[in-house]
Image 1 (cartoon, rainbow, N blue to C red):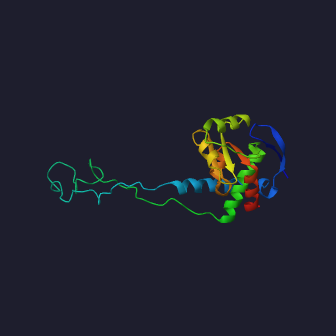
Image 2: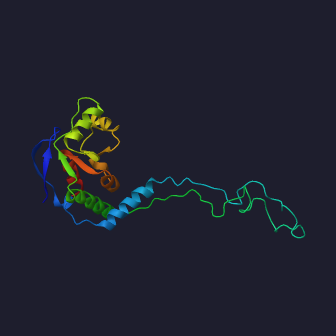
Length: 206
């Protein structure tokens, strides 16, 4: 069972905490992690690209010149792909890129991502993140106290002051414990968890 330090907002160690091995100490499955990241990015794609084929471009109904005797190559339409203004040969059409992976695979991938943060010493637990007002400067000073430059900060319960204070920091993202995903955990740099976020994650995924 991994034992990590718990820090306060001043960056001082205020205790220790045991992390549940069923969530933070599993065997890392790189294949499932990769699949979860690909799925997340695929599901975000809009898939709204569109170009017209020769059947959709307006005009070109008449044969531009007779088949033989002109000295030109034979042509059937001025909207064929080789003509300027013609249709695209294999034109892209709107499509849905999303796909599904099994719930068990998704959970295993998330546990693998959380475990990798522990193994790489990129996980910090904070006792609480409480702000009396929405102020970016205050949130930035907490991150400086924790010696964190780039991070995903996971909160256990609704904390609007913390979320709004962090949103202007380009390398800091926030999320709630019930909405974390593999891509953001891996992309976010250091994973900063509040104690109640750890408890919520263990409750859901253990």
